[in-house]
Image (spheres, rainbow, N blue to C red):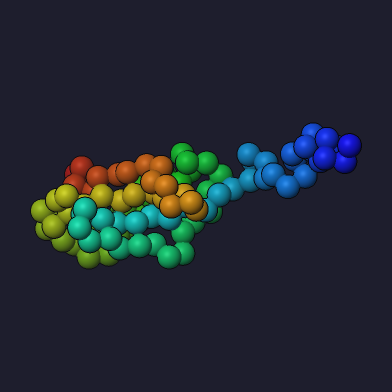
Length: 96
């Protein structure tokens, strides 16, 4: 009988959907991976994408590089389980 009560109380240990999650922004060209060890807290994947776009613009602003150097590179937004939830090609952002 106690097992029935605990089975009906899934919220006791589950996190609600309104809590923020940690996302990591890894840079890769398919061969080389530059891993984000710190990550960011975001309330949704859309918020993580906005943060990733800001990070890319900040990265580009730090050191002006030849746009060809970004050819083939992408930023992968990865959740805490290591699953890539969004990919942003960096060479497509060269006009920004």
